[in-house]
Image (cartoon, rainbow, N blue to C red; front, side, top):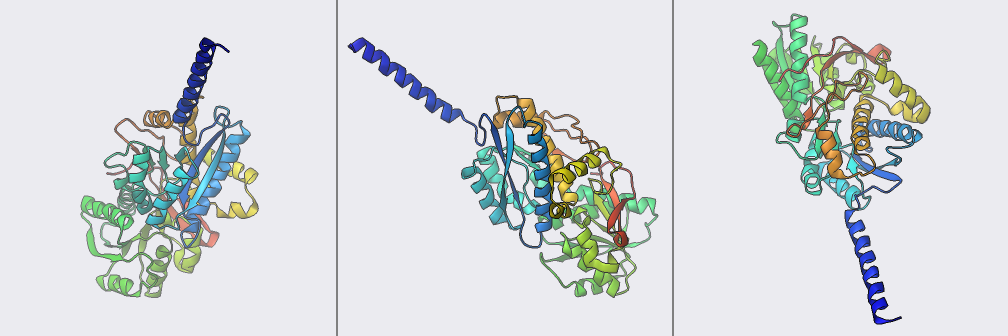
Length: 401
């Protein structure tokens, strides 16, 4: 081989090597010609596991359905999980592991409000497309985070909207109002809704009681509320706290009208409360699983019957529906990017989403380049503990800010 030919060969090899390097550099995390890897950080152990297990069951339904339809633009979907145990520091560790070890493209599950708050700096730094439809707090989107999109009203909007509607329609203005709330970001947001309703309607608030996360004995708190003469209680617990508050109220023979946020829209809350769990009200932004008149619910439950085992079907609850809505939203954005899939493209498609429909599972979803929160309308449900179900007692209510 002469010198000229050797130089030509070396030039071609160098160009090929550079192309390979550039290709590696340009490759998007979690994306191959045949696959998209997505991640979820949710609690699937400990007391809050009924949230995470319901969430993951719905993501399985979505994954199996998408893949049976040929994937998204020819790519099959695979979901990787990290269990945060509902602990903020573990959530941060989990998203780092999913991004750095599992190489996920985006997130479609972000646990509770405090957990997402802990993850936000890392998500922002890594520019990970993220959809949160599990637990919504104002701090998640105010100020906006470039790659994080929030579906559903805040707890403040949820409780305030429902409380104003209940008081007006059931003529409860003369009642004595109180709130018991968890002393963290979640509880603060619930309290915000309570205070807005009290102020908007000029109600008489006789007590505001904060309790520590994980509290199991509410005897002192309920005795205090009884002494204050409370007749309406806004319950600001996560899951089990609702049941314990209701049981203690029944024990003290307190005739309370009780309104809780969506974490009480669970049959285990009814069961744990026993007879005291009948008749309380819940504010939510997705309908009950039993509401098959909603086209989206009938479709989801049909897919669940097809793709889940009997044990997995028992895990389903309202957190399954919010997970499914978030997954549909991510699917739509990825599909609109076509074959050239990048994180930046998905973010751009999400922020230009207008009136994305879910067949009644939630209100139409919209974002913009400056708005990362799409609050859904609020429903009021009533607990029918004897039948282990929840009934709708309101039409969708426009969110009251």
